[in-house]
Image 1 (cartoon, helix red, strand yellow):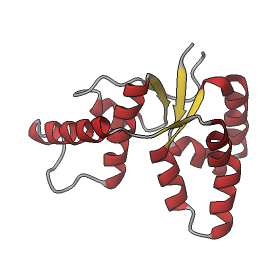
Image 2 (spheres, rainbow, N blue to C red):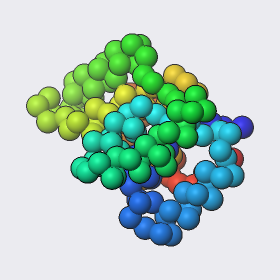
Image 3 (spheres, rainbow, N blue to C red):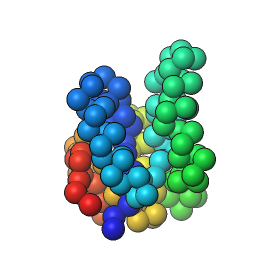
Length: 148
């Protein structure tokens, strides 16, 4: 059975749409033993929570349950190093501009590499970034909601 990590955009979409929230709950409920939470996603969600109420809700509803179960993915030094190599390779191939790599893309590369290291499939709505990363590094990702 595959193991999954959900990208921050999946949680954000669920927060904005009751239909997407239902889809997230359904997917999470059916595959809970196969879901992990990534440190990069925690950073992105908490950075976007611009008031203490939102931060508490993210902690209580998303981060906390994964922390209590120890179902966390944190990038290793090897993943950090490889993510830098991938970015340099994409710049060398003229797929990225040397002065214009957005922070969100840096996070996506780190997310992709560390998911690959851990044998996890990333569930994301942002396929463009991960298709670009896959030109240098094989990564497993897909749109919501994959069938197990």
